[in-house]
Length: 216
Ligand SMILES: [Zn+2]
Image (cartoon, rainbow, N blue to C red; front, side, top):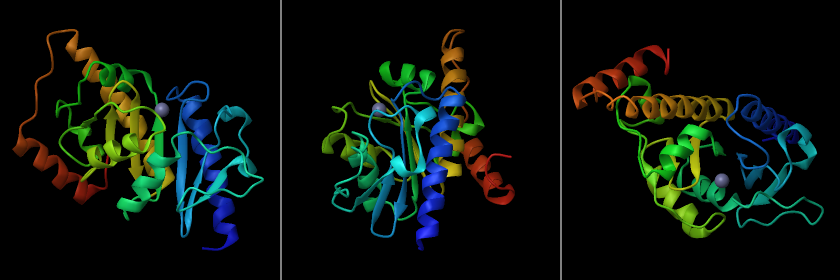
């Protein structure tokens, strides 16, 4: 990776953070975005609203979470991001947000079942719920990594949602779809609950995704 690659990733992190705010996935300073580097990660700083975020404000951390002295304070959730890069070689980008409907379900203790075929964008037949742990802790990082095992997206109890993916663009797209699925599922709960797709129906969805490119 050249320094040009790192600069591009910094720009992309800013774009994704601002897109999350513009699309209503985030409000204020509550979300965070990161990308893998060969020797660590880049992550959004703590307490900077996306509209004011600049590429040079993105914090570079080594694998142990150390930042250059001149860097801003990294997101309080940097451990969640670092923990995923350590365990998941298939993830090069992580997006975390408190999007409203995902958070409503997470606060109600409800994972998202296979009620719509697009639930499969999370990589599995359901979008699971990681148990509640205090924000910013290694315990939360561990709970999230376990809930994401074998998939790309999960809800976080009493907190929000998190997505890991091969690229930042993909991570943003999945987070946006998780929010949409959460909103629709929440809506079905108001009118008697959804009809659930069975295992064979979801297996057919995964087969289609393989053949056509995910999400078309
Ligand atoms: Zn959070």
